[in-house]
Image 1 (spheres, one colour):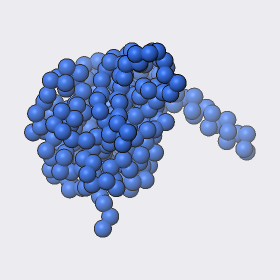
Image 2 (cartoon, rainbow, N blue to C red):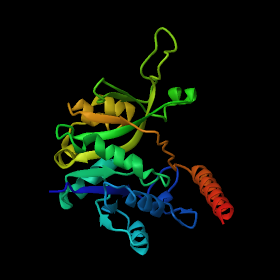
Image 3 (cartoon, rainbow, N blue to C red):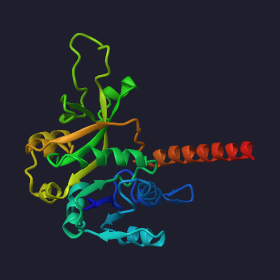
Image 4 (cartoon, rainbow, N blue to C red):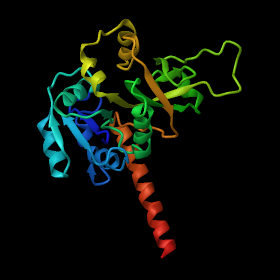
Length: 258
């Protein structure tokens, strides 16, 4: 029997820095539509993607571009809590939490995250990491770092530089950026809202620490995907430029081949 895997894009209208950002126009479409279309290309999702929202404005737009929507309660403290509500009504073996503000999400990164847990029933949750190249990212608290054990399971996530290199720069890359793409097994996801919020999650404001503080493993696999999220209107403008540059390059290639 084939494992059913459901991709879920949590989408809120409220945003402290950029209200309504998921509906902001980007290259002629709402930003959320770009995320949805990219997610549909993930091989392991097989087109099973829905958008979870508490806002009827978002729901109407999703239906207008042919997406599937599920209305959820308004007061979820995190995207994972919103996914847990979806899981209670949408049976599947695995659920993929896809950020609604990453219009350039790589379908191969989604597949990589799925594979992190697909064949190991003892792993309740999986995510991604990428080697940090820019040294300024190491000290940037907005770039979440992750360290893993020799089996690839997370030891800790932090906004601080981890690990600390006591004797100076190592000859091997030690710093890894956490990519906020999550995969959950259904049993774990349904239990997540009732897990105790620990002091580490409260201090770092990182919801994935709830799993670690309650004794659950998180499998972390490496990717080359560099997440580009949209948190401000300025971010949207930068992504718009990327879309324009890509379109121009593709047009140039078609012209040279013609």
